[in-house]
Length: 265
Image 1 (cartoon, rainbow, N blue to C red):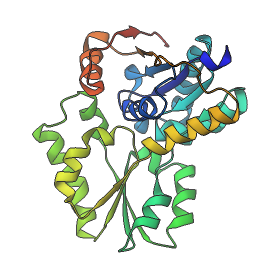
Image 2 (image 1 turned 180 degrees about the horizontal axis):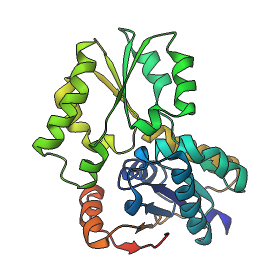
Image 3 (image 1 turned 180 degrees about the vertical axis):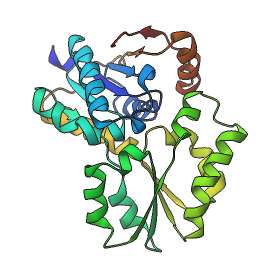
């Protein structure tokens, strides 16, 4: 049955687990396949052509697994490849977008900070988004080079991560932001540290729940929602070194998982 096919979710590494966990929470009956393209992370510093190529290779693999929908759990990959995938595939393709709109509407001070990779911030898609909402608030963007790579190591409480986050957050706080946009799926994984540095008075917005609900809406629209009453399965693949990636993913997923090796060179 089409309803019992899996949903494919992918990211350049472990960051998409923050989205996968929200999908699992909102759609517990769905079977999920997750691909971490760890050998080629981070996408944020790759050329658009390279990112698009990786997205097409991962999507080709997922299609061979007979999936019913794809979630691009990466802002950079979405900005570069979502339209191409939608044009070429005959299944729903759900992409990411930094949640600037809800942040703008929730900001009382009218000053919103955006944390994201350089790839996302330099994309045409984000620049259109920025142009649309920058007239309503002061929108301050902060690229975060190096942060994804540290998060990929899986130890989220190191002095190195704390210091790097402080260096990115403090300039935004000094400029009076009252709302922070997490524009990369890796960043919710260090949300406790971000909250410690930013303080209780700062609103923090990410897209995980919104993406899960959009997936649910599209599956419902196309009559693809699972009718399984026993809970869906989750399978994991990575293009990286399994011995290195598996313990990191298990730690971030909060349970030991079986990670399959994937060669998409």
